[in-house]
Every structure is written in structure tokens, then in C-alpha cells.
Length: 315
Image 1 (tube, rainbow, N blue to C red):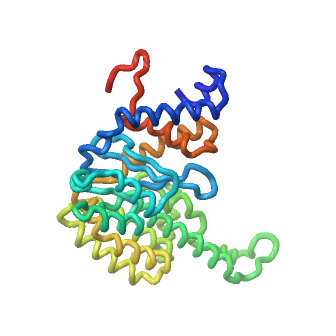
Image 2: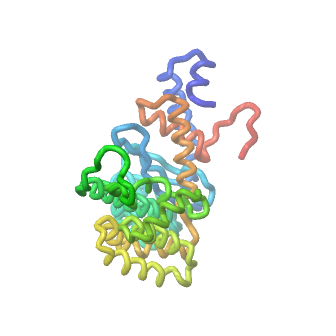
Image 3: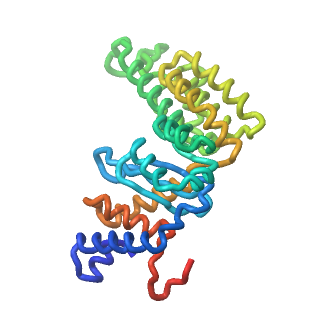
């Protein structure tokens, strides 16, 4: 039951319901929370926004059970260290895999506090960065094309035997949809736009090939992944497109984590699923002023802390 429905049912103020959630979570933590960190072998770490203005929270999910094991307001090394401080030495040693988006601060903490764990960079985040670089390249190409001078066009139709001056945007016009669709989902018109882009050899076409090439790395399989990734890095760092040159530097720093995710077949999919539930809870509650109330609700909904309710079977 969402918080708004509970407040209406109980005829209570929102803050009262939030306090009830916080107290229920705290009492369950005392009774059932002691073994929550036992048996953790593979965890996913993500920093998700819960309010406008770049206010984040750190969420840790156990991949084996698919449940939230810990959440905290804020993001950074201090928050991840606070989670690791709760674990015993045996629980530290039991963690074998950590999946994350590849942020350097997470990698530094994992290397320092969990030396026996393997850090795997989530494929979705790596490809989304390539998509962002392609979009930046598209925008830059559009601005450059629009700034080029073109012959002034006279009124009316062109004279017989003469053609109208070309549009200054040329082949980079109308690329927003074709560039970001799967090839099998393109319409006839969108495929024609890409064909014109290819014929012109415009930078967005080369960026499109680079973005698709990075996708292909994650489909290559563990045996071929290292070679495919190294070829992609060599291509991207020499492409003379600043957006992808910068991306190649970031991907090179995360090379080992990317190869680990391919070899182990892991991703942050479970964490993203939990993030979707968090966004639903925020939307149903029309936002949360108190982050502690939101975290208490997340733990009641998405963790192993399950209050005993009438009609609910033990799980």
C-alpha cells in the first residue's frame, strides 16, 4: 500500500505516516536485520536521484536475492564506506563481485576495502555514455551546418533548368530519431536519412558506427571481448571527434571492469529494477521531504525486512 493511500485510510497526516514507517523499519532492523548481510556474494551499487537539484541516495542490492540490503542519503566514498563499516571481516571476504556504473569513487573504495572482489562495469551505463557522445556530436554537427553561409535564395521557384540552393544543414538534418533507433526498427524514411548520411561521410555517421561498435563488444562473448574492445579503443581514440576521443579515455580506464562484466555475465539490471520501484514510490507519495522516511519505505518494500501483516504469508 502506498503512503498516500495509507494516510487517507488512517486519516492521518503524511508526517505521521512517515514516522510510522521509520519506526517500523527501525524495529524490524533490530529483530531481523542482523543477518541481512550474511551470505552476500554479489552486490550492485548505484547512486540514484530522488529529488530535483541533484539530490542522490546510495542503494546497495544483493544480486543473489534481488533485494535491497542497504540505502543511505547522499553519494560518494563516505556513503559506500559507511555500508562497508557495517560488515564483519568474514562478510567482507564473502563478497566476490561488485557491479556499478564505473564511477571512479566506487572503484577506489572497492579496491581499498574489498581487494578480493571483482569490479564489473554495468554494460548499460557504458553504452549509454556512447549514446550521449553521439547525441553531443549530432548537436555540434547541426550547429556547424546551420552556421555555414549559403547563397541567398530568390523568391519563387527556381528558373527552368536550375536547382534551388541546398539546405545549409544538408545530410545532418533530421537525425534525432534515426541515430538512436535499433537498425531493425527503422522506418523506410529513417533508413533513407541514414543512407544519405553514410554517402556524405558526415561525422555523425562515423559516430553512429562507433556507438554500434561498442554495443557489439558486449555481444562478442568472453573469448573475443578483449580483442574487440582493444580494436574499438584504437579506432575511437584516433577518430578526431572530441566527443568519442574523450569517451575512449573513460572506457580505457574502465577496461578491466567492462571485461569482467562480460566474462561473469553480470549487470546492474536488478539495481535498475529497484530504482524503478523507488521512483514509483516517490511518484505515489508526490515526493518526500524527509529522506529518512523514503529510505524506511524502501526498506519495507524492497528488502528482506518484511513486517508480519494479516493475510501475508512468510517469504
